[in-house]
Amino acid sequence: LGWACWKTYVGRPEADGRRYQALEALSIALSQWSHPEEALPVLEANLASTCRHWSHSGERWLNAHTILANCFANVGRNDEALVLHRAIYAKIVATLGVSHEHAIQSGANLAISLFKEELFKEGKSLMCDELLPAARRSLGTDHDFTLILNQNLAAALADNPECTRDDLRVNQPGAASTRPFQPRRRPARSR
Image (cartoon, rainbow, N blue to C red):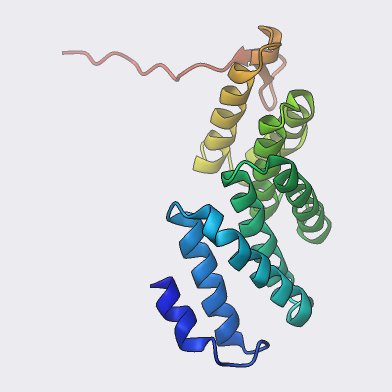
């Protein structure tokens, strides 16, 4: 379907919005349907087009960079993904602030890239000092994305061979104590 969309609008001028959307649809379809190697040249063309014609559109710039960074990670080019995720996160934080949901999501992508590059200390610092407190404040402690951040941090720490028991403890908001990551215990049902 992505190819059909692209073929429909390929003849339009490069600055045409529908052509841009068709190229973006193709790149997303390829990258999300297990064809990241095929998606890379399309994503790079999409990014070049975005920079040439829509550099004033922050949303298009961010989308093009984010999709390309995620594709780099999917094909194992984690170092390039990390560079892009750093730039994206910095731009979003400068524009929207660290507590905005887009900033938190972008920061999560950056943290995952840091963990993949085995930069555990930097990734943990980003998650524990910036992302989790911002998510708890703006989204709430029981929000799905806050819980996913906790899960991603726990998985990354478990993958870290230098992780200690103290690393598995995270400060809870408003509490003097800490608790380790562990599944929530549900009360036993009475019969």
